[in-house]
Image (tube, rainbow, N blue to C red):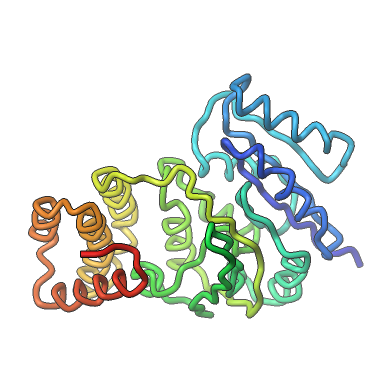
Amino acid sequence: MDKPLVSVIIPTYGGAEYLKRCVDSVLAQTYPNIEIIVVDDNGLNTPNQLLTAKVMEEYKNVPSVKYVCHEVNINGSAARNTGVKNSKGEYIALLDDDDIFFPTNIEEHMKVLPNLDESFALTYCSGIDEFTDTGVKRKMIKTFTGQDLYAILMHYVTISSTTICIRRTAWESLGGFDETFKRHQDMEFTARVMAKYKVYALQHIGYKRFRIQRNLPKDPAVKKIYITHYLNRLMPIIDTLPKDKRKDVQIKNRFGICLAYLRKRQFLMFVKEWLEVRPGYRGFLYLYQLVYSGIKHKRYEL
C-alpha cells in the first residue's frame, strides 16, 4: 500500500543563501513520499528573486520539487497559502527557508497522524535544536495533547508552523493562514486550529532552527501594531472564553508591549501602555514574574 503524500511548503523571502540547505534537508527525509513546494515571495525580477531562481535551478530536474513565484512580494502567510494551493498532499508540513528538518521528522509525524481520528488536525514535535551566534541550544517545548484554546492564547503552549504536520482537510476547513498578518501568523493560525480541533504532541526533536533574526521588529510601536492586530482578528474566538480568561489573554499579550518599552527604556510609554491595559492587582504580580524572568535570562537589564 502506498504511503500518503506529504507536501512540504517552503516560503522564501530574502533567504537565497540558506535555501539549498533547507530543500536538501527535505530531500533527505526517510519518509519516501514527499513533494516540495518552494514559494518565492521576493517579487519577480527583483535581485533576491533572481538569486533564489539561481539556487532553484539545481532542482529543475527533480520531479518532487516545484518552484512557484509571486509576481510581487505579499507576505509569508500568503506564500504558505500559495504553496498549499499548488500542492497535492493529503498532509501538509511547513518549513522556513532558513531552517532544516532532521531526516526522520516527517516519518515521525506519519507514524501517528494518519492513525488519529479526524478530531485531531495536526501533530507537532516537542523540541528543536536552536543555533545562535553563541552555540547550540536544545529546546524542549512545553507540549499539550488535546484541545485547550486558553493555553494557546496565553502562550502556555506554543506551536510554531515548522513543528507541525496537518491534515489537508483541516487546513482547508480553516481557510489556511490569514493573509492580513505579517507577524504572529503562527500564533493566529494555531489559535484557530485549537478552537476547532485537537492537537497531538510528538516526543521528538524535529528540526534545526537557525536564529538569524531577520525581519524582526525593533520598534515597540511596531510591535504594538502587530499585537493589536493579532488580538483584534482573534476577538471572535477570544470572546468564547469566560470573562476572567478573556481579561487574562488581553493582559498576557499587551504585557509583551509593556516589556518592549521597558527594554528600550521608554518608561513614559510603558506607563501609558500599562494604564491602557488596566491589569489590576494580577498585573503587578504578572509584571514581576516577566521582569524577573527577563533579567534572569539576560534579555534586558533595568
